[in-house]
Amino acid sequence: MSQNNHLSSLDIDKIIQRFDKPDVVQALILTGSYARNQAGPNSDIDLVRFVISGAKLSDDGTYFHEKKTLITILTVEPDEYEKWFIDPYQATKWIAGIRVARAIIDRKDFFTNGLQIRARNFIWDTTIQNHANIEASRRMVGWCEETNKGLEGLRRNNDIGRLLNACHGLSWGLSEVIQIQRGVLISSDNNVFSEIELALGNNTQMIKLHRIVFGVIGNYTLQQRVIAGLQLFVLLTEQMSNIWQANDIEIIEHTANQIRNFVPNLFLENFLNE
Figure 1 (cartoon, rainbow, N blue to C red):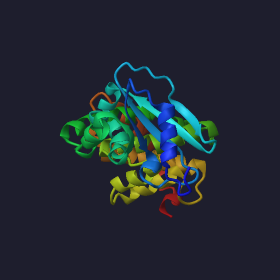
Figure 2: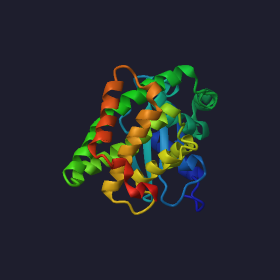
Figure 3: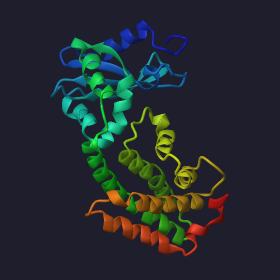
Figure 4: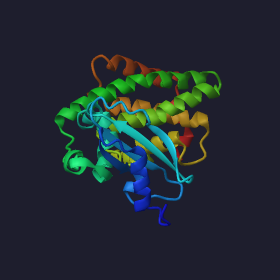
């Protein structure tokens, strides 16, 4: 590895030698911090390998490079990467990263004159927004189970196991709902939190609840973080009511009402006004 934590030409040659299969590999790209020239001494090397249909390569995973740096490699076939442009969740995960990725193998300009141009020209249009609304609604229903665990954990005088499960769903789970519905094209796993908050704009109440449930501000207890997350669920239910699907709305609204009715003063907790 070079001292400035960029990949040297020797590093790249070794990576190519290790992961190239010329008969099936169309491109091998760097994503993440090395692609953005932001790598630090503890950064992993993230690789995505594009192959022809039916290639069936089985060496995806995590490896050691020069006994110093972790390499992760993911192989994708056409039916997988095409979803990045039509599936709202996949688009939020991949498009921004592909726009700045660096090709280290690019046969017939498959990546730079193909997928990367498509990513840079990608527009979050009405069609994908409609799909995003459906997907966000479906996922909101999925997180109702963890919401109920939060209520039950509080009822049982702070059952830690239930509260931890609830805290995950009410933080990462609800963030995912926002990410999909707002079409937040995530630039990096490390930027998910801040980019979702940016998409919330001036919604200060939601931003504060979001920060509390993640535990990034204050000295809130697990119980308080779950209570904040429950309030976040109710706010999302109310503020996104126009996108809930007919098959989902009864479950979502029932869960929100369970939260409202659980403790009469749940929404009067003093810590939320600090």
